[in-house]
Amino acid sequence: MEFTSVTPVVLGILHLGPRSGYDIKGMVDNSTRFFWGASYGQIYPELRRLAQAGLVKGESAPRGARRRTVYRLTPKGRRALRDWLRSPSVDWDIKDEGFLKLFFAGALDRDEALELVRRLRERHEHDLLRLSEVEPRAKGHGGFPYLVLQWGIGLNRWTADWCAQLERSLLEDEERTRHAEPAR
Amino acid sequence: MEFTSVTPVVLGILHLGPRSGYDIKGMVDNSTRFFWGASYGQIYPELRRLAQAGLVKGESAPRGARRRTVYRLTPKGRRALRDWLRSPSVDWDIKDEGFLKLFFAGALDRDEALELVRRLRERHEHDLLRLSEVEPRAKGHGGFPYLVLQWGIGLNRWTADWCAQLERSLLEDEERTRHAEPAR
DNA sequence: GACGGCATGTAAGTCGTTACATGATTTG
DNA sequence: CAAATCATGTAACGACTTACATGCCGTC
Image (cartoon, rainbow over all chains, first blue to last red; front, side, top):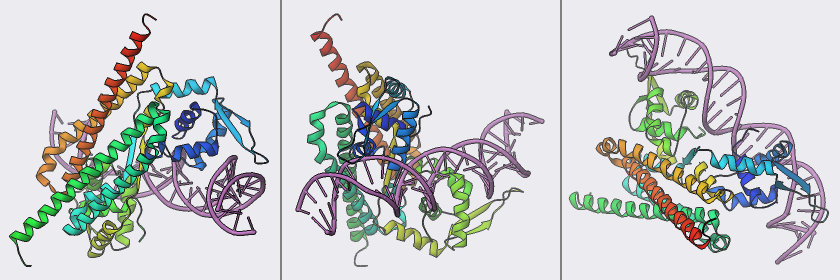
């Protein structure tokens, strides 16, 4: 059984309890999505593949006339999850348009660059707010998911602060230049 | 001219000066790669596409008998870069296996979880070191690329510290449990 | 003369998103 | 009864990596 990128999230979430594909997608969207997303186009085929390989077992659990399949880990699936957790790999891959823009901000005027930093800060403040909103609920559950949430909150706060400081220093620069080279 | 994911890096790097495709790949690999990568399979076709659209202009600049084409931004290309920089989008997409593992670390024993955190810290310390090594050279150039490097350094340091603190608190937990439930 | 770096390029294949299709249920 | 949500699934497309092919140059 080859692991694809969606395998560990599915196994990991099923380790927290039996879930439908729809449930898994929902959980990913409001927990791991900040560092690991997953789409229906990955989740449903993966559940079938995992069932075929015997790592999960699906059983029909309709709600009314609405068909529904919940999956649970088999012992083999639990072993596969633990093996993955023990493996030393810590790969990562980031695409961050905000910092790419900042990297090239020298192509803009100072005030436009400042605006760019402001938007970057607002993004992180926005994410910070979103994460803070779920914090109380997550605190109740505790454990590692809660720890990771705290990391996310701290990280966004740190970056937002960093942006704010950069904004101040860019403003200072601007003022200093205005004094040195007045009334242009 | 549609922007693909590789368009802004290519335009941005060419804004810093004329470069060959090979040069661009080299620069990406030791600067933006931490938040925006690019492969030859993207760069070379993109340079042709951009030349065709008139955003860059390539000219032959062989070194000896080794053919070589350097590209430079046209005024149209410079405008396209600035338009992109001014656009409000700040998309991002992160895949971080380390934090995904931490999220599900509840499936492990305490000492295995501790080992996982240790590896996560080491990864960030490793990246921190790599970035610190290029810092002196980047300082000379200054500008926004240097600012972004400092952000990367700060971020990795912050996360490494966070991991270290988590390690301490997991160790404390363990000791407390050993006292409460001795000689098992 | 072998190896590593310079230099350009393509083909095949994988990976992942998006949009769509279908249909039941709940809620305003 | 309309809209949102629950629920499952697939097809088409686009993004990206990898491996490979080619060949020159400098140096050990």
